[in-house]
Image 1 (cartoon, rainbow, N blue to C red):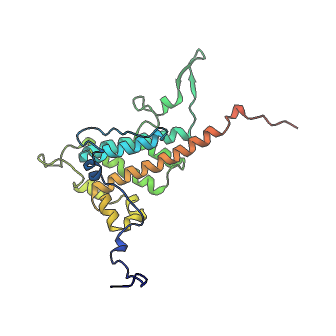
Image 2: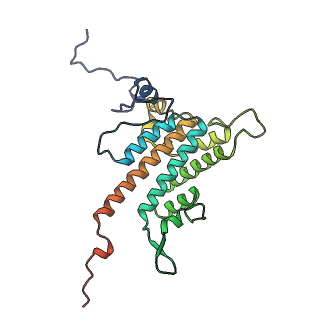
Image 3: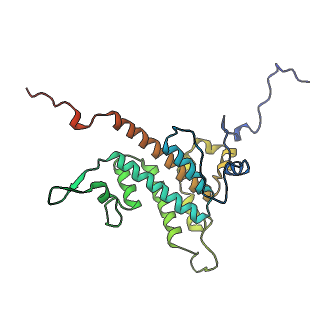
Length: 246
């Protein structure tokens, strides 16, 4: 019997295991009864948990339970909503007065209203403005454009071209190629571990897409929460004392 004090040999599979990470997969949550796969997930959460965290967790489960088309549509819509929230956090809403001097509408309703062709009413325009305001970096900008194109392909195409019997999926070549271009799944340090890649399904196009959507949402929501906290702690310009003139 080997002495307990003797140095033990290295685990040959250690390089394929992410350090100190315990995550329940969707299958684990379903088996444990935390998720009903036949209904939209509803979470029981402790009081005081930030709404953004609850929303991200619940929406993540909903996306994971969808068909390929559903995952692309809901994932893209959720990401666009997060991007809009980030833009509104970085900008200032203003009341727009009519000829009578009365406030008739708010600036945000004009900026983000797609029906009235608002300048920030589409996903593409929100992505460009977020990049211009340095709310996102170059790699995130590129990934957002890819995600937007994937969502649009699912939204506007019901079948593979010239193949009426074959609906599109994440295995459709054009979509698969786009998913393989997503950088955030490649840049994640944990992606170097085989166990993590298998758990997150990062070797599959669908897994790469869902991972990119949720991780970008997480980053944007965290940044927005911090920005909102700073704004709440900073006096409005009208509340600041005017400097005395010499």
